[in-house]
Length: 117
Image (cartoon, rainbow, N blue to C red; front, top):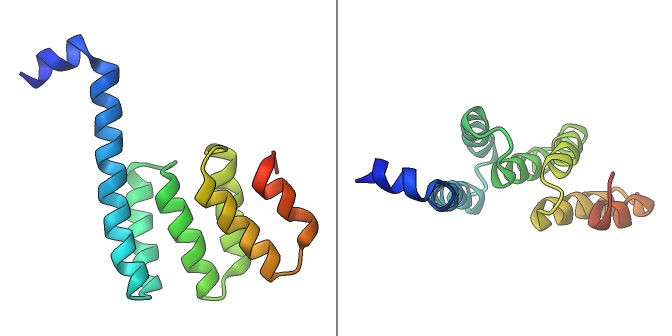
């Protein structure tokens, strides 16, 4: 049955599969983030990124977790690359801009929020 649906509506099913995985990933990461278990969250994100290398939720959570652990340079690198591969993802852009604000690099905030880095 699934194969028949796939042949008739491949784009529809692919979109639903992507939405499903995005929700599952977000739930798994939310739980670890709320517990402030950043080391485990980074491991979970690495696992997710191994299968879905451009997943914006995993990229965002990994970047924020690294920042919370004091690895700000690596966090910025990951979030900047995430914005390049997911230019329309608001959480990636917002978290990147927040880190720039914390670092008092205010000149970088507009670019992080609006345009190419």
